[in-house]
Amino acid sequence: AQSRYASLRDLPATGTCGETVQLYMNAGLMADLPSLEGSGAEGVGLFRTELQFLIRNHVPRRSELAALYRRVLDNAHEKPVMFRTLDIGSDKVLPYMKPQDEPNPAMGWRAIRVGLDKRGVLRMQLQALIRAAVGRPLHVMFPFVADITEYDAAYRILMQEVAREQRLGHDMPSDIRVGTMLETPSLAFAPKRFFEMCDFVSIGGNDLKQFFFAADRENERVRRRYDTLNSSFLMLLKQIVARCEDARVPLSFCGEDAGRPIEALTFAALGIRRLSMRPASIGPVKHLIRHVSITELAQVVDEALDSGMPNIRRPVTEWLARQ
Ligand code: PEP
Ligand code: MG
Image 1: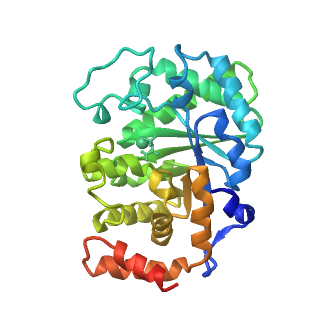
Image 2: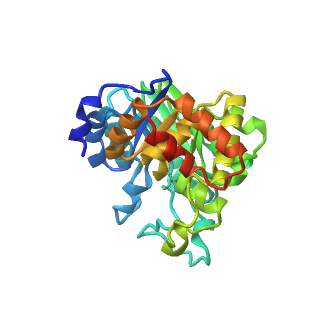
């Protein structure tokens, strides 16, 4: 599929209106990295670090992780890589972790909650990231933050590790940018200071949607029940866009929906101008964006939302059919 879009590789995702969307790719294994070149992605918008933990039968050592992250950055050349710290728990159970036997793992002890309660692994991972990025920019992103105090705590741990590395006389990254996933509706309503503290925010639409509609993303029976172009969900996205614009923090969307052309285009129309997706989706999404006016679609979307329709997929596809 990629070859069909190969001629687009080095072209920007610019609509006929002149507005541009930056397209990034999601990754997690070394094997994903060659796609960075081939897909024309601007960088890795989501690097799921837990995959490296899931394929081992022991906790990786710090030196092992640092070497691995260094290779990731080497392979990315100068392109940015947003490293998401461990998102374990829920559906991602490490073979060497005691099973928690929780009634509701998706809403249980997972991701940053584990990191903050058992700091050793998070600290070790942050040390590995800092060491891997010596002399170049480091982007760290925290998963599943539900509340400003969790972000504060995670941020503080990162700063402690930075201070520790400096104390030990180690060289440092040229710049450290810190951000978070927005995967719970609560975070969209966090105090303004939260957004001001972030260097970037990325919507984890898979989880955000599951918690917004209270519909399990793993449950076939309900997971397709609520469309992404449901007006209520888009109103939530609009709220997040407004809050990020207010605090001047760059916003991206890195859930699976970012790789679906109609959804991607609608997100762009709502003002989300960075999308991160599986590499094979970049060509089709770019192709569509380059053929339409994002600003014109923004009007269609706003009018449809104002009209009180429960779902705006129809006006969007009808507008697309006329292009
Ligand atoms: C998400 O929730 O949308 C996301 C990108 O994270 P994951 O799919 O790894 O939970
Ligand atoms: Mg998630």
